[in-house]
Image 1 (tube, rainbow, N blue to C red):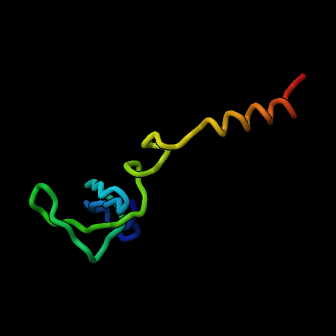
Image 2 (image 1 turned 45 degrees about the vertical axis):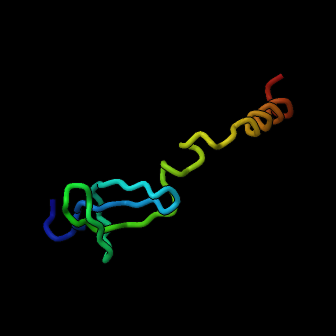
Image 3 (image 1 turned 90 degrees about the horizontal axis):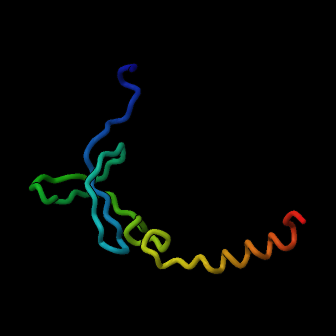
Amino acid sequence: MKAGIHPEYNDVVFQDLASDFKILTRSTLSSNETIKWEDGNEYPLIKVDISSASHPFYTGKQSTRANAGAIDKFNSRYGRK
């Protein structure tokens, strides 16, 4: 790898504002805000609006029945005969 062209890759905490879910991971993002993690260390905090903890598709709150009707309607119009 060439030296000096890659961004820093550090530990950060992502916090979902909708569900207050937090995860410690590695990222090239950084922040001026910090948070004290369970291990006692402080990490940069990145706040996100939605994550898998609050997204309707991943939490099972999204309905797929409406899509099934649309698929049947499409197949009846344009499907093979």
